[in-house]
Amino acid sequence: MLDARVNRLEAAVERLAEAQTRTQEHLQLLTARVDTLTQRVDQLARHMDQLTQRVDQLALRLDQLAEVQMRTQEALEALTRRVDRLAGVVGVMRGDLLELRYREHAAAYFQHLIRRIRLIPRDELEVLADDAEQQGRLTSEEHADLVRADLVLRGRLRDRPTAEAYLVAEVSSVVDSRDVERSARRAALLERAANLPVLAAVCGATISAEADALAQRVGVRPVIAADEADR
Image (cartoon, rainbow, N blue to C red; front, side):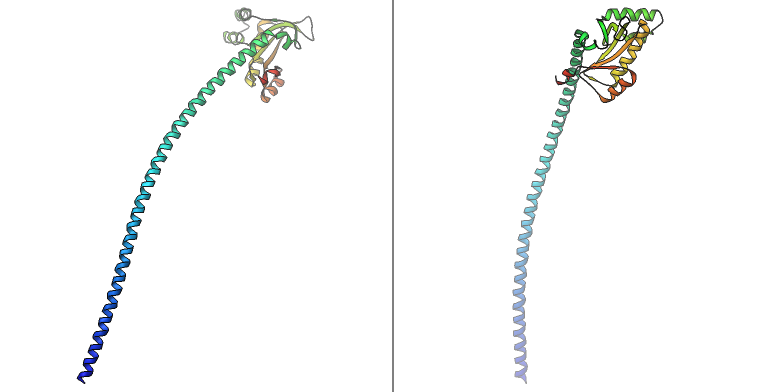
């Protein structure tokens, strides 16, 4: 009986030893896995640090690009303003050249409206407007408006060869509705000042559709130098 018990105890001890061995082996495996995981965590941490550095570099690049873009935008806006100013200057110069051309070639441009054309100098127009103001036919504001007319001609009406008449023209590179309105208004003022029929005209390289329609409604004659549109 005693031997049997001893044998059982020895067997139990062996089983415990084997279990301890397996536990030790399992613990070693777990330790190895923990070490591996620790290494991977360290690698991930280093990788995260690298990513953080790259993100910081990208953020810095973005800030630099944003600053460059802002300077570029400012330069573009400044250039746009300069181009707009130059376009305005060119527009004024072109309008002045057109006005000069209409003055020098008045007979060619307006002979279908009036005959025996004579260009009215500005000083003569000023005297006429001043006399009209003194006689109460124009106010001082109307006087000032009339003498700003771009072009004033005198001649005889085509349909009434003996009837004297004036022609008032507003000249612009691109004729718009405001040019039509000014021409009609100043023609009416000159008619009151001179007590003669006055034709109204607008002149330029092109005319907008709105201005053309308005001119037809108010009786203003468009005199367009089509060859100037290509210059």
